[in-house]
Image 1 (tube, rainbow, N blue to C red):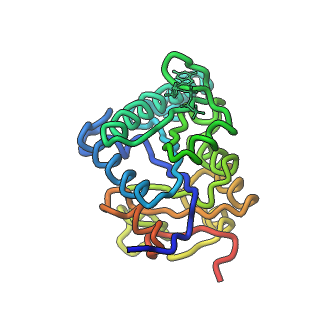
Image 2 (cartoon, helix red, strand yellow):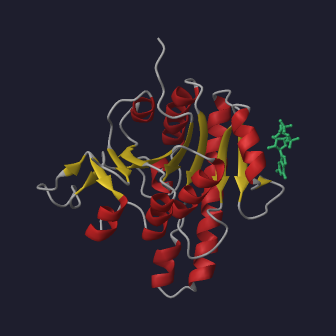
Image 3 (tube, helix red, strand yellow):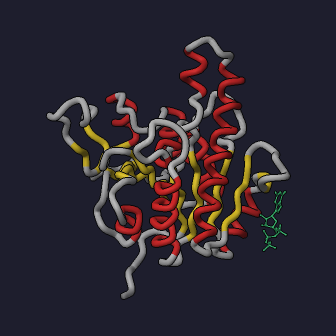
Length: 242
Ligand code: GTP
């Protein structure tokens, strides 16, 4: 079956927690295998796929800094956590015979390539899945901001942000059963309403570069593929929602 695919190059943002499964810490091998299969289903559509992964399943820089650790040190620890996750995901993808490259924003030559924008683009053109590790390489920036930055740098046409809920709601749908889901919302409304989708730096970068974000439930099987074959899944964030 042929589809008219709305996006050719995509950046998928996964939180570190997406690898945890039912555990409350670390990496669940079954869950990483599930993610890898979901990613393969998309790659099979001949879509170029880059991935930014968080590290919150291992270490949260912001939380540690609240408890007194110096913020920069805590953030560097978080960046190392993202690298552990990147290697776990790479391994699972390779077990499905996918070609992958991990590029790190912090040089760690023995275990990953260093981030080079033009090289990342060449890898994508050759059908390799590129996993970006170590965030932006700078403290004080989240991995959501890294996702926005990398997506813009490599010319991705959309960011797919996998979360625990199936879109953006007027308030936290887990705590408030009256929360209403948005089909579409503008970047500026997210900022004005203080919705916790991505941090403001990430949202602003997307807004200024007209990069759409689709927020969806990563635990819902086939959701990434459904988005990429043009089905309405989750919430879409753009400049113009009319
Ligand atoms: P092309 O030859 O351009 O198609 O890309 P390639 O990635 O296959 O070429 P390269 O010779 O750069 O890489 C061969 C293998 O070495 C790949 O698996 C890369 O991920 C890996 N590699 C390249 N540079 C580094 C590095 O600095 N550190 C580590 N750990 N691996 C690297």
